[in-house]
Length: 482
Image 1: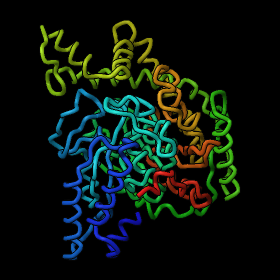
Image 2 (image 1 turned 60 degrees about the vertical axis):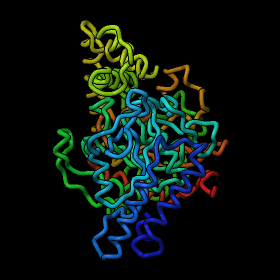
Image 3 (image 1 turned 180 degrees about the vertical axis):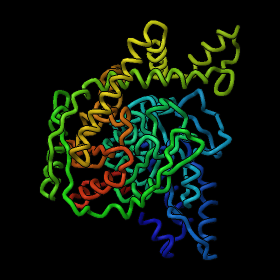
Image 4 (image 1 turned 90 degrees about the horizontal axis):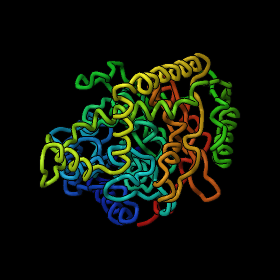
């Protein structure tokens, strides 16, 4: 990040950087609504610590002085961790998420926490209990979800980078809508400790930045083994920045014709095809691959995810912590009213779907069958990766839609994730990079999916694409505002 070099080189102080960041947030976020909370006083104190360390000649972390935003489902000991829900609107965590600790150890300065769909359940950030985040390119359109606040904050140049979480596309889809880079690391590459769980076998913490180089830097900081998360693998973390250099052999990019069928907007299809042609003209070999079971991906995902949601959100019952209804008549009334009053419609819908799928008489017919289909989808991708380095596809069927267009049609909203959910089901890594704009000037994203724990290869190929194009350098109108 340019900010790191500027602070280290003495071109500006960390305090000056953070002061400018806070001023931009104050000027722009009144309309954007990317942040749920901003802690300027704390951020300035942290900036002074970085400046003091620099003057003393102390060793500085790789993100020293860089303002970062984190999605508000990552626990922090400072401020509240709301998950975009009335259930937790005053909840204060006693510990930091592992990824938050890693950022702070690297010298990053967390300036605030970003808006999201309630408990990360949604594709537009309209399910937030507090307000919807708007798209920096067009204030009448959504920023995507569920990490819409993080993507909008990066796109609008409020912060150089942010953390989101990705359960079915929640870093990649808003990154595509907002014209930035969003990464879903392989399942187990980044610790989930301190990430409030939606679907434990699908959730993954990932960075959102303006270009692939910054993504590589952030991933290097947050990745690595954490014994507090039993699913976090103990593998060496490569130097992703150094790994961005072009590989000596031609890359092989897989393309599945099933990704270019009904429901894909012609302008999105054209932009993605042009991106694939750009890869080919720069030496990539384009290889047809078949993924026969991806057509079942959406149905499979909304059984697995909702079942795990039902289990994970059972803890929010008005007893242990979270909102409690003030005058319950009995224990059943306490549970019913606490949850009914504090949880939004989409969250309630997913809890009910998952509870049904796990109930006696339906477990084998729905949830168990979904797990079997999940294995078939994983096998399809693994066979494809025997022939190719990555698979290229659209990120979303359309560009950012208008606020309110899909709130009354849950199925239409779910279809926004049709291209992204498979990487969560399989555990593979995937990234969204800008590849053009539509006739309304709205960003379009290109997705690369790579084998598990091959983020270095994935990011290298994404960087090669960005080196041959300039789509990632485009900025929304609000980015030039004072």
